[in-house]
Length: 299
Image (cartoon, rainbow, N blue to C red; front, top):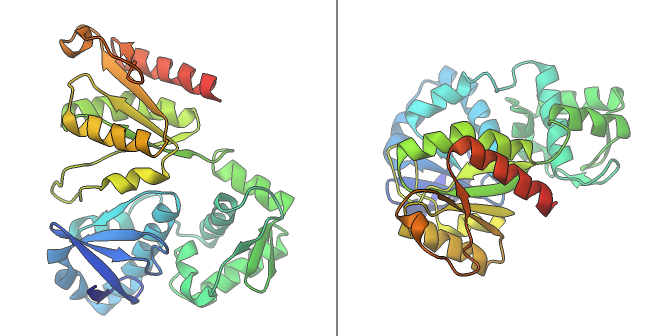
């Protein structure tokens, strides 16, 4: 397998070519996962001035690391890395970076006092979007002094106080991964992301669109990306073959699927056999309410 240097953490790792994109596998930016970079932009990004790279690359590495740890797939181009650097969600102050480390340990443990190994530290300072190891160590010491975190070698644990603070900053609960399978239509997808996604997130699930076709600046996803999902939402109003294919894959992996279909359409007039018994909806707001009720019932 071909290998290449990750621009953002400088580790040489295997890559996979997927259309116009290269996937960087298990570098320090995305351990155990991958991120994608538009192949034609690699040289241009690498040609940026030292001062720009010195400031921007640690931020991009931290962004990839955080998004990957949250189950998100990251696709980069030379245009969007500047937007990421300037995004309001990027931590700037030491206090914001402290919160990021607490959230990381919180996401990867089930209770206060449960161990999370971060090893070696020299490869993990992107957990706090830090430019170097020294800043990470400083942040760890500050959290220890505040009795939010304990450390024994490379093992870290949240105290009760640290757990509560991390939970509060994360909205009080951990979101479960979920994917939406929708027709490849921008208007329909925007309608769903505006009206339905916020309600799904309120119900404890992290909603993500499953992208099966490659578009400008956006890499197509493979069916295997669905494997880490806890729930699938599949809308079959338009009988899109790609929706049925992905939903069938999910069912084969024993991932629950909630089917939906809009009333008053030609597709909605058909009779469906189990397990395809869709929720019938009139408008996105009504559907959002029905899905919330279904998710409460599932709990």
